[in-house]
Structures are given as structure tokens and as C-alpha cells.
Length: 272
Image (cartoon, rainbow, N blue to C red; front, side, top):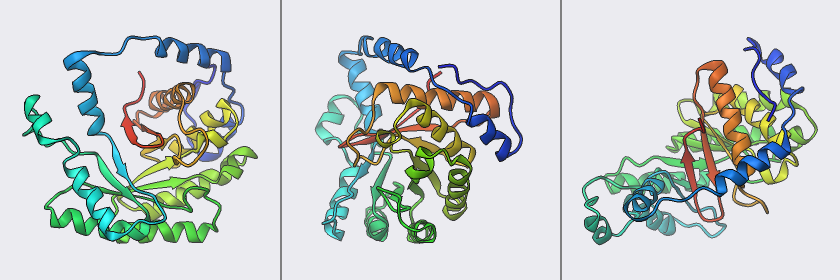
């Protein structure tokens, strides 16, 4: 990958002029992904430790058309105790407060999730998708209002989706402006920006979209909605974490990586 910061621009326009010149070395990314996939995975107690850690990073999610207060309530209880007590006891982890990272629902179900967690005396955060999830094709004001509604109902994490048209046509300044408005609408809530990598076409677009999202104020950049044909791959993850590393080296500000699959989403620390 030949994309690397050579200077630290001070204005969004300068940043975006730099972004337009970025190119990603596809073959180098694929080779690195192959190397990572060839590494040995931990076994026995180390594997158990990693799996438990993964559980604590999951956003336990329901994003179905038939979501109701009752199934959101069940999801919240599962998030509070995601692993059977007897298994935790065998590992001497029963008193370590193992929960998922958050519960994630549609904006219309945020109030139900907040109510269920409060009733269970849990401080687990509620995340909400917004901004026309999963396609991001609704009018801008509608997308902004969706964010405001979710925050007002108690969501402390907002998963926005980018307008893929802007990425595919190279309108990076327009994308930056939209994400900045989403950031403002989020207020104190964390903002995770979903790139929908399966619909961006190239590694270069993934890198550029990652950079624009971070410059616009994202706390996390996220691979996908879980609704696309391709949600997350090793090569794309490498491109995204390299963008995170470049941004960290330039600004000193650490952004986090969030991977979405068909059944689970989890937070990851940036690759060194």
C-alpha cells in the first residue's frame, strides 16, 4: 500500500485534495492478507480467553422487520449474560462481569432497549443504526432527524451509513460535509461510520472513505451493514486498519475498527 501521510493538512479542503491522489497497491494488500490468514490461531485456554474477549466486544444486534418490544427485551437479557453461568464458573470468570459491548437496534426500538436494560439495572449501552440504514439513500434531513431521534430516546452509540453514491463518484467533500452533520447530530453519542465495503468497488475507495470518515469526526469506522453480499474480508480489513494507522500517525488521534458479519459485529483495536 503506497498510501501514507507525507504531511498533516490543517483544513478539510487540503485534506480532501490529498485524498484524491491516494492509490492502494492491491497486490500488496492481498499478499499481506494471505500472510495473516496463514498464521496459527491460539489453542486451549488461550483460545478460550480470546473468545471471551470477543464476546465482550460484540454489539448484540436485531435489525429485523418483525422486531417487537418483547424480542428486544430478550436480546437485552442475552446481552447482559451472553455466556452460560456454569461455563463461566468452570473458567473462574463468573464474577468478572462478562457482557456484550452493547445492544444494537433500529431507532424505533431504542426506547424499548433502554427500558429493558434499566429494569435489569444494567448500564450496557444501546446502539442504534440510523441515516437511512442500510442503503443511506433517504433525504439528508430525514437521515439527520433519525439520528436526533435515536439520541433523544437514549442511544449512546449511533451507526451511520455513508451515501455510497458520493464515494463511487469521488465526491469526497460532499461526503465529508454529510458526515460532519451526522457528527453534530450525534452530540455526545459515539458515532460509528459504516462504509458498506462490498459496494465501494475498490480498495482505493475503501481507503479514501475510511479517511474521510475519520476526518469528519467518526469514533469508529465499520466495514458493513451486514446486508450487503460482501460484508468483511481480510484484505479490506487491512486497508481500513492501515488507514487508521496513517490517521493516528498524522493526528495522534486513535480511531477504532468495527467488523460486521452476518451474525455478529465486534470492535477491534487498530493494527500496529
